[in-house]
Amino acid sequence: MIPQENYDPDRIKQPLKRTNPQKGRGVDPKWIPITWDEALDIVADKMMELRNAGEPERLLYLKGRYGNTSHALLYGTVAKLFGSPNNFSTSALCAETEKMGPGYTQGLFSYRDYDLGNSKCVVFWGTDPFASNRQVPNVISRLGTLQKNGTLITVDPRLSTAAAKSKEWLPLLPGTDGALANAIAHVLLTEGLWNKEFVGDFVDGKNQFVAGKAVKPEAFKENNTLGLVTYWNEEAKDWTPERAGKECRLDPEQIRRVARMLGKAAPNVIVWMGPGVCMNPRGTYSAMVVHALNGILGSVDNVGGTHDPVKSLTGKYPSMDKYVDELAKTHGKGKKIDGRGDKDMPAAMKAKLGSGVVTNNIANYMLEHPDFIKVMISSWTNTPFAASDGKRWEKALSNVPFFVHMVPFPSEMTQFADIVLPSTFNAAEGMGAVTGFGSMHAWTSLQQPTCDRIWDVKQEENEVTWLLAEKLAKKGWPALLNYYANEFADPETGAKP
Image (cartoon, rainbow, N blue to C red; front, side, top):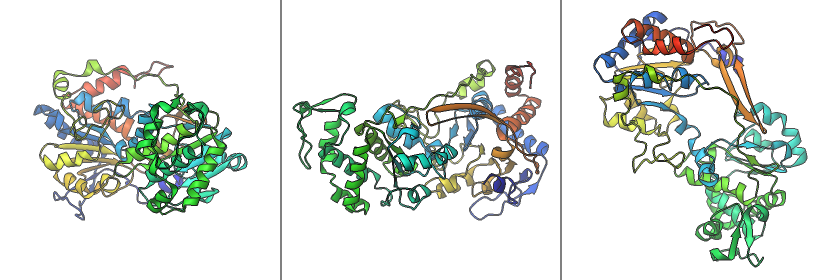
């Protein structure tokens, strides 16, 4: 895919300027090509209008896909030094709900790692790591071992690559993942297949999990779990395979068969939950019950099970605090427009109100307050396509007086841009630091370009930011450039950027 995308003739090949002031779905922007110098002059002028008017908070930055340098050079820096609290990621459209499941059951608000080499049974649930994942080469390389040593199961409405390689494929009705997980838990508990060493057992040693019947909490002594009996009494006791089969449009006997496979292989089991489980209304609850199966099976932190990711070794970027002026300090502390922390939008990513992002709520605010955001900058995003009810985003973007889009390809969102800055295709043309983990290991590496650039493109995180900082300094605001120039140095030679 990298060569096809890198050399795609539809790449944006040079900066573009909008000449049609009208914006909307299907409206021709009537772009004309301009130079980088012209484009960044225009962007800097618009930003300085906000600073000079004493309203830096009216700048909005929205990031999509990003690299390791984003926080230090763009996302976490530009808005803070400029004085706007309104910098956001699109992570709530990506994987935040997936992290909520293990977060509220296990206390791990993160992606998980998996001991694939020692697993006896793997469930790819709402994910296809052979085709789309942070660990694609790693998982592909272990397919033979997984098929030889264990059983592969896929839960997915579509016949994915993972499903095609699996012994069992459960093509459930989209959005019914919670019902299926409850039914699997029901079978594991009624048939005594939970991992007693990890979970615990009944005080008298007799299984009291009987379909439709409540259990007294004092009858069960838990080891490493909390609230199993409450979960049984309130949900799992009534979720028979027959009930879930009707809800999910699956054969009840297949649900039983799969549950028994998991119980037999436990604790060397992986329930690999992906975003397909939870990217729907009330998805957090689906994520919680699906991930909770790892606890019932005793696979958490166990051989062949699910694990906390190993952290990559990285240093810290320099502090920017001394470059934040009084205007930025005053206006940068305002409330973010995504509404995080409100009663109707708690966004409690780490069990703390307002600790998460509510990306899709930004459009609602922009529609309710159409004159607030005056300058918007966004990189590697396409919210009219990626967000639910994307027409809201189209209407909101139509109201933004000045919008800058930094992307390698034109998209639905690009159609609303006043300035288009063509990004490098970072997988082939970019430079940066790359961190990751997989199969109980973590790594840190330096990413270098694999080819020369054909078109007049620049890397948004560490080239455009520098050039924009130079423009802003010439126009009377040097803080961004001073931070880059004074606080960064080559660790070997000491050379300044």
